[in-house]
Image (cartoon, rainbow, N blue to C red):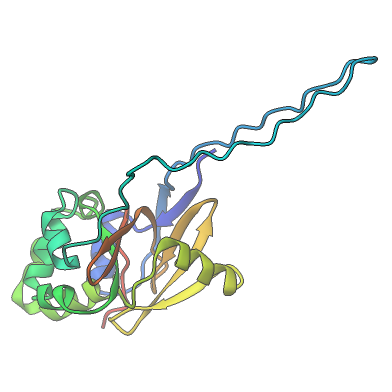
Length: 220
């Protein structure tokens, strides 16, 4: 059975962005591959037990290349991503490109276009209005944590924290990381939940974790 978590309905998400906390709906966690268990072989009476061969360790292929080093900044990676066009538009409106191109390092939880598509018509235009730039900037900074944390490091912090890790964002507010099955679950200050569904996009000044939802701060 696939795991589920709650996050804001489109109408209430718009209200939360501009006003404060709201209630939630259900979204599916990323699917994980099932683990296959092989039953042990049985030994027939009078038959010598089978000899278990030691697993062979394959030698690395000759000339195998290491993973290439990152060559782009977080800002450049978002600009080039086919899944983060809306995020790019908002980052540009908030004039955060210089921050995300700076030395950092940063950890960015980057909502995909499909997350923003849940917003009701007109919400993005409202956020992009000059009068709402300060709120937009706070919302975007709520997706950025100082320091580069891989998914393994986030999992280690969750374990060390007894099942939860508090990550303070550049907005000054925290998001809470926990595990639901094998998925990393992010819970924001208003109870909105999202999952990391594409982790560890490493850049020269940090790491991006693509998410299926928006992490909101308390505003106002």
